[in-house]
Image (tube, rainbow, N blue to C red; front, side, top):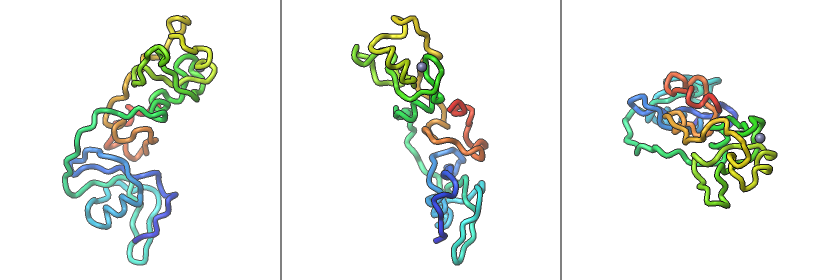
Length: 177
Ligand SMILES: [Zn+2]
C-alpha cells in the first residue's frame, strides 16, 4: 500500500460507471479503489503516491468499473456550514461577513428551521433583529432563501470544489460559495 500523506489533495471525486458524479472521498479511499481495480483514475491530481511496488498519480477523479445503483437523494442537509456556503459567508441583511445563523421569521414566534427560513447573518444584524421580522424593521433580504439545488450541491455539500472536477460537475451552482 502506498504511503498516502493526508496533506495530498482535498479529496477525490467518484463517478459512477456512467460518469454520473456520486460523491467525494479521501484520496486514500480513491487510491484503494484504483489499486483494487474497483475504479479507474480518469483525472490526475497533484503529486505522485509511492510505495515499494507502485508509483501512482494522486487520483483527482476516479470512475467505478461497475455501475452502482444509488438512491436518489434530493434533500440537502440543513447544516450551519451548508447555510454559510449557500449564502457565500455574507450577511443576508448588510452583506458584511456572516458569523451567525438567523431565522428570518423568528423561531420564538414559530418560525421553522428550514432552508427557506434560515440565512447567514452578521452578529450585529442578528442582535438588532432580535425576535422581529425583516418587514417589521423595514429591512430587506438580499435574496429570498431557498434550498440549494443541483447535482454539484448534492455531491459536494459545503466542500470547496476542485476546479479539475468542472468537466463532471456543474460548478456554477456552487461558485457563490
Ligand atoms: Zn449584517
